[in-house]
Length: 74
Image 1: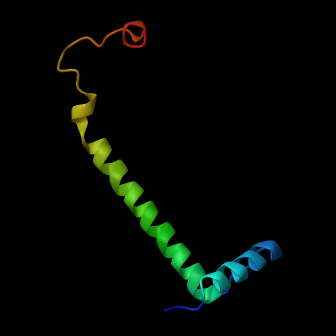
Image 2: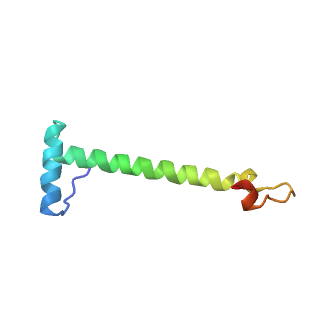
């Protein structure tokens, strides 16, 4: 584990202290967990986006003409 120093607004520091106390943990541990959650969420989103872009079946009309918007939402 690495130790780092962060700078934040006073209101943010107050909020994180209260939140850590509510969860019975340290500010350091809570911030670390929040960053880990953010990292995992971003990784999952990026992976899902790559899979969606790679799936070209959703983009194929198989030579058929797409219906008019008015017909679809009429």
